[in-house]
Image (cartoon, rainbow, N blue to C red; front, side, top):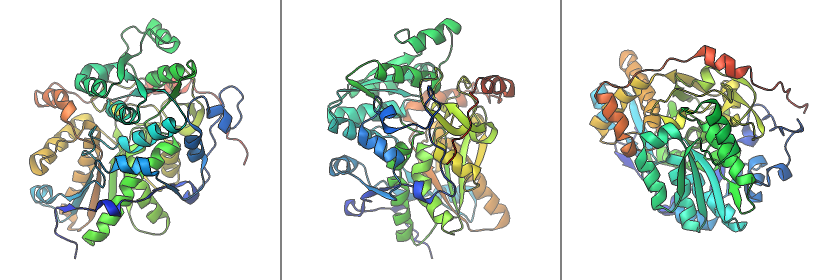
Length: 457
């Protein structure tokens, strides 16, 4: 019988010592990134202006595991291992026979899963002598995490924050500044990409695609600066897999194993980190359903096209084969800012295309309702992004109530909602609405995509 414990804990000595690389286990080859100028597959030299060489090696590695450096591990121990909780009170409230667990990443100093890669990226940049890192952030979780990582390793940090989130979440900016970073609302008038966007639409709410353009431009036009990305790329997802590996060890302690693993998905980092170790199990024959949950107003996996596209609006990044809504698409200003991205990690996209992962899209209001149910039973207030996973986990638990199935459900609890209280205030006042997906806007954006065929193997 599964353990009845509420918190399933690992000791520091039980921390995973390696990141799990899913590349060798993929059911089909990953399409190579394409150089936007030559149309040819990208080589390491093409990425050198943006990333330190060790991260470039990790991006293309086919090694099944990569050792975590000692200095990174020492920082991880400020909050890792994170607890796996059994949601007894939520189960009782729902009246479900399902067993609900949540892997709680909100205990990190920035309050989310993001420093698992931010610390690693800051470390590798420091090793290469980098003095300054430029990045973008949606809801501010990634910007906070990289500010934290850069602070610990003595690197200057410049953050371009999507304007609507900059205005919605002022305390995220203050947190970044507390760790010594500079944070500006994107688009700005300090980059060519930003000025071009503002000339077309002075009132734009901004988007991650726009903010990425500004951060990339910043990095490539300065000799002392590299670029860091908080999601999408292989090395970012790699660093997050410490989450799922810990969870697997904790389920062994609990004498249980999930029938369903559910995570929110915007660019793919939180989802991949919690789920990829379980995807490995599934590809090896284990019976587990893995659910990727996105917003209806930005349904990249459920409504997008699986094809090559730019990761940014100004077309400065390499072309990636991924599910996309088009790099010029600007999502509605929902409060789950971390999920407002036009594209999806190529690794997640490939696994969805191969039916190893199921994608679902849900509306904003239902996620806030589920988040408050969670807070009023378990005590923790989820970030609006995390609430997407909470909502679907509750839906699955209620299905079990109807069928009598005693399924085990794991939520990838990616972060807390303490900096999102303004959004909760609006929800409780009845001032939030569900934004409908605009097929017309996406069709217009998809017309801007380049016609690129996948290179022959």
